[in-house]
Every structure is written in structure tokens, then in C-alpha cells.
Image (cartoon, rainbow, N blue to C red; front, side, top):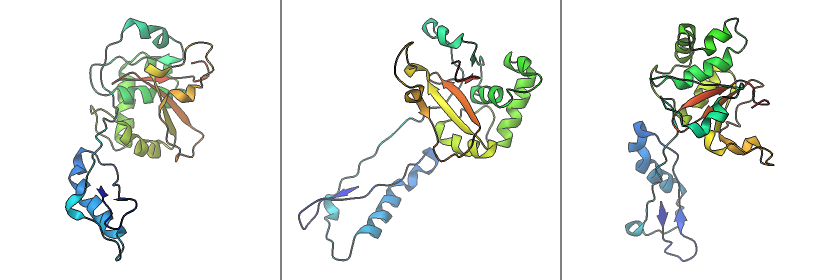
Length: 203
């Protein structure tokens, strides 16, 4: 929210936080409250001539998705565990494969057998999330807290070509620097779908 200064000089500006659909009704009220807190008693602003700017951002999530041929070279890597599903649980299937990488039945889990669905549902419940609901990036911090690990997500569209000098970290869509854990779980995001990366060095 931006107010023209009545005394000359820079305009008075205040910004709100981010909001999801559930609490977006608080957006304008919160920014007005912030403006009231910051305006000093000797400051004059033209309240009838202010400008409010809204930025609407679509937060990535993931559900079911088909695969086009030009991505098969990446998805066919042995370091990638592809998730094929017809529901909205690809995030939990992908995360299950990397969290249970040392499970005695990991090969069965990778093949998408019922054990993977069972473990994925348990993981979802443990994280306090809803099964069969797409997982968006703004929900991941609470999941990281529950699993005591860091989730890193690469963008399929930004994977560096062979022999490039670009770092794989430039392809990250999600990385939470506030997580202090030695456990890292790598996922691959393909538009609205998640896959698992079982070995980032080989990838």
C-alpha cells in the first residue's frame, strides 16, 4: 500500500505478508494495521489518494500427470524413481521412496506395490496432512519439521544440459534455508507432478 507524502520526498509504503486462499480476507485489514503502526504522529499522508497493489502467485503443487517423450531421458535415469499415479498423492509416493531408501523392501516400494501406498498414507498422516490432496510448496516447511529433514525440489524444466558449468542448485524450485538437518530428500518437479531422486550425485 503506497501513500503520497504530503510533505514532499519519498512516498510512504507498507507491505503485508503472504496469504493463502483460506486467509486472504485478512490481507487488506492487516496492511492497514501495519500502516497505522508505522505512521508517526508528525507524518501526514493523503488517505484519499493511496494505491494498493496485489500480487497473486500460483504456488506449485503436484497431482497426476502424463509424460512427454523429451523428458524420458531424465526420467529413465537409474537415479530417478518415477511416480505413476492417477490420484493427487504423487508427493507422498515420491517422498516415501527417498525416506525409506534403506527399507528391506525398497525394490517393492519403488515398483509401486501396496506397501508403498501404505507407507505413503502413514507418512501423510504423521505430517498432519490430508490424503489425496495436492501438496503445494507452502505446506512443505511443516512436513520438513515433522520428518526432521530438508526437502529439496528440482525443476524439470531447468535441469542443466550435459557439460554445462551451471550448478544443479540453480535448478532448485524449493529449498528451505531455515532447516538445519543433515538429512536431505531430493524430489523432481515436473509441472504438476513429483518424482523421487534417489541419488543426487548420480543424477
